[in-house]
Amino acid sequence: MHVASLHRYPVKGLSPEPLTKVELVAGQFFPADRILAFENGPSSFDPERPAYQSKTRFLMLMKNARLAEISSRFDDASHSLILMHGGVERARGDVRTHAGREALERFLQDFCAGETRGAVRMLQAPAGFRFTDSIRSGFVSILNLASVRDLEKRMGGPLDPLRFRANVAIEGWEPWVEEELPGKRLRIGGSELRVLKTIDRCLATHVDPGTGVRDRDVVGALQESFGRITCGVYASVKLGGTVAAGDAVDVQT
Image 1 (cartoon, helix red, strand yellow):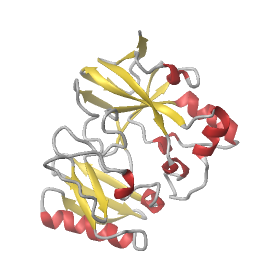
Image 2: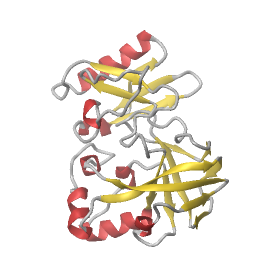
Image 3: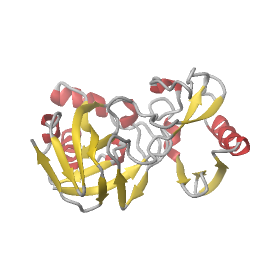
Image 4: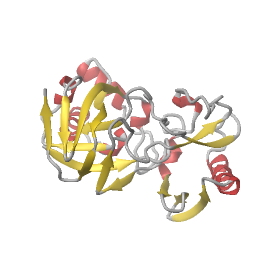
């Protein structure tokens, strides 16, 4: 078993950024993952007292499928978020500045016209918080590629693993072995993780990550095939270390 790919999602609901390696830290989230989100009308999020908010309060693929058409990139050095559409840069802004945030908000407000409940406003995650779907367990998300291939066969067509928006994709496991992993530990590269729970999937997986078209009923297929809607697992980092594509993955009891 080995790491097939690594991705981070700096902005909730926007495109992935592939990584060759990452440094995991004990007790921390996947680095620079879900550190930004765009509020879809007032969400009552308070950065002084950050608390879990339903994904429906933000721009996200489940409701705003067109977001998949945007290619986003976060530059760590300049703190700038760049939004591309149709191969053309449409907005860029330093997320630390009012002007930078406003430029990004204005573009997304126009881009999602007719789908917003109010003003689009960028939010930044304070220390120790992330805009994950499961704040108590969403530290690192892990996907078994063999399970995706098994689901492909059952659905009669290809599924891009990026539909599942995982941080770590693993090759070499048997299909659906991850369903038995909660409570167990994983040695991945130089790190050790504890599997917390399986991941319930939502309608965001119905959206093709390349086109923004809702074209596959992934949740329905999971329910029909297995009587559940889970695919992948969340894990917490117990021992920090470097994880790189190609690193071995060992299951420990």
